[in-house]
Image 1 (cartoon, rainbow, N blue to C red):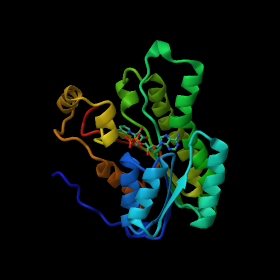
Image 2: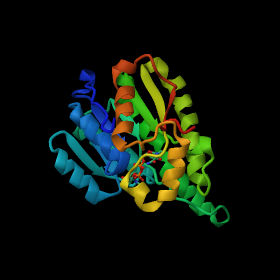
Image 3: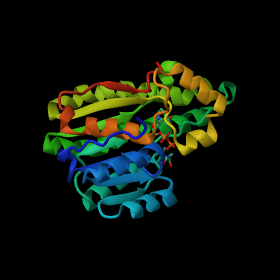
Image 4: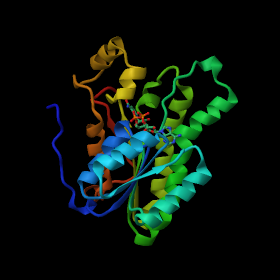
Amino acid sequence: MMTAPKAIYPDLANKTVAITGGASGIGAAIVSAFHEQGAKVIFFDIDVASGHELAKELGKNAYFYELDLTDLNQLTKVFSVASQEVGPINILVNNGANDMRHDLMAVTPDYWRQSLAVNLDHQFFAAKAVIPYMCEQQTGAIVNMSSIAWRLGLENAPAYVASKAAIEGLTHSLARELGPEGIRVNCILPGFVETPKQLEKWITPDIQEQILNSQCLKRFNKPPDIANIVLMLASDVSQAMTNQTIVADAGWI
Ligand SMILES: NC(=O)c1ccc[n+]([C@@H]2O[C@H](COP(=O)([O-])OP(=O)(O)OC[C@H]3O[C@@H](n4cnc5c(N)ncnc54)[C@H](O)[C@@H]3O)[C@@H](O)[C@H]2O)c1
């Protein structure tokens, strides 16, 4: 089975969804998947060219906002502008990241801080920005993107790995605190997902072979495979679920 079947979640139509890092990779698949469900999709990214291109391709109900997620004051402002222009946010997908690799001994305090800023900090502040809208409606869903990298102990990426571990902790903290408000918070840990960036930057044919040998399933997950799980966690079909972690790695760990 190469192309995943598409489910329709009628409750997602007309919902307002915010997605960080939505201009490319898995984020772009998530943007397209919500758009296909009839949702109003706000997405944020530093990659302005790709963001505008995707918004143009999708047309009505797709709203791109330029944002550097490491600028937390700007994040709060842009989220507020977007919700005024498009509508109060019902669903947040914390997807943006940069899985830069770093030689352990070359990591400086500035580099460490920058890595946590791009991979972790904004997930909390994006949640903080949307919680008031969700509390007002006494419902909402937040999906945080972590990674199996921290369960595997991926080498040459200690700051990325530490951020991804913290995201699971953040998920548990927010889920407990926001549950009484009807807000569900869950987390996805993808394994290797075949994106153009992964193939271009990190994944050689040798590594691909090692990954396939490690996975139960002998195919590479693609961005729409992860987007499908995000849709399910955002929809009320999963209203019984919060405070959970879903591993989507074709059976790697
Ligand atoms: N692809 C994989 O194999 C894989 C595996 C495990 C987890 N993940 C996680 O899934 C999510 C998406 O992964 P991906 O592979 O599509 O990532 P990616 O690096 O290809 O894309 C991330 C997006 O975030 C944007 N971005 C980067 N820095 C930004 C900044 N400062 N401000 C705003 N936007 C910024 C990029 O422009 C890009 O559109 C990430 O959280 C990643 O950690 C991916």
